[in-house]
Image 1: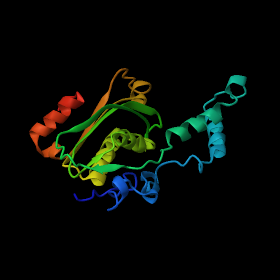
Image 2: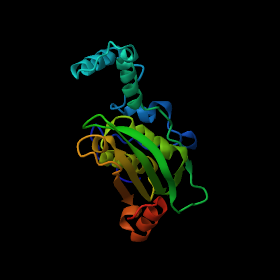
Image 3: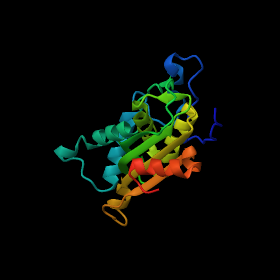
Image 4: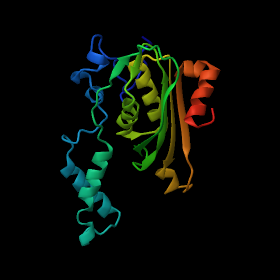
Length: 227
């Protein structure tokens, strides 16, 4: 087991599967959402208060909400932000690596969307997530689930990249883990500099994918980006 990363309150990675868990499936009490204070619980969100705040916000900007087509806009706005900030709980399922597979496992072009925490405007793109297996392998859908989970909160692209990589490393103990995010930020393309078409690329490499040049190059080649 590799050393656990030191994380702050906005950077929660989770404990590895409990020994003896069936197929390495984390028990219900240890779902990713259970120890994640940053995510929004739709059932607990005060949508009425959010709707009132949205109405005040729009009115303060001079937007007339008395028009028929805008009367429900504050409610729609509150619901949209609550949905963007709500993470679906899931089980991080792992399995014994019985065949001793030791080559790269990579899921490419996983779509994601999240909110820039500085302007609360969306940024979206694709994630490439991979690892070099050790004693256990991960259910493939969980790579996409990890990205979705950590994207469901106000974010920076740098933090989101590291959170996915650290969580994969902490939960699976692979020989190496790598994450690349390619995203377009509306806070940069639709306001301010208005750099339409500009994309931002971030990467996080851990273990062998960081220290071994050949493994690093293979990861970036298969991910379709330049290392």
